[in-house]
Image 1 (cartoon, rainbow, N blue to C red):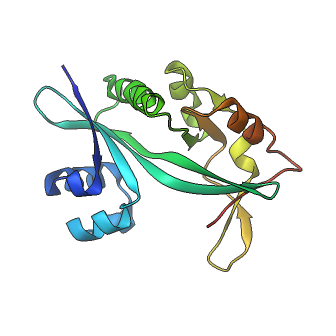
Image 2 (tube, rainbow, N blue to C red):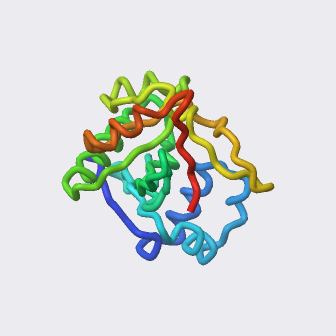
Length: 182
């Protein structure tokens, strides 16, 4: 039987951090030592799934403070990111996704995520509601301080959003943009 755990950066072991960095495959993070990792992700919690042999087989990160301003109102959403499994097509991602949603619901936490069109079938299969094409209306500041559209994602994932938040996010479109910034 697989084991599910939620940890803060202070609770992570050095070995878990190495595994996470390797699974994420983000070039900039490959050189992080334990202290750098913990400082970089101090505003996050980690949802971890271990197989019976105690091997980390799937993980995700919840970043607690994604600010999105829509029509002059600033919203703070916990953001689901860094979702990956050590092996594909083994059911680890599906199992972890269900445990994450149940955990967030039990703690009454609203959370969203983002995905590309290519990943829609997975989220549809695991019954995560999708706000199709709504991420295309989000902008963020680039390195020059210019608002640009986010190219990486198409959709917003409704992990545990309230009806009010869903309504606000569903209003995003050609004439209503969301701005991600502190």
